[in-house]
Image (cartoon, rainbow, N blue to C red):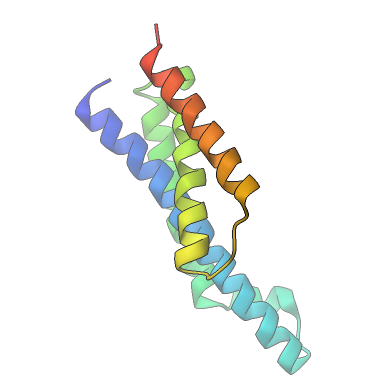
Length: 123
């Protein structure tokens, strides 16, 4: 795997995680606004800047993912999605102020351990 392929893969995974955090933040705000105004959640979400920006970032990640798939075997690229779990977990705690229990951390550790095994032992 070349440096460019690795960078593209990491960008695709990171952008997907950032997009998901933006969507969550936008939907949290949209839900509160729709409840306060007794308006439509769908309409409020569609007009939320965070939701729209999250969709754009997530769309960019999809394009980067397609470019990655044109260069990297799927059995190597797909396990890297596990890094998205770590990024989303960290962002949910640091940015969204959500809580994670010991089981969440243990599961994340197992997923990352699996990624390490796959990368180290790849044929």
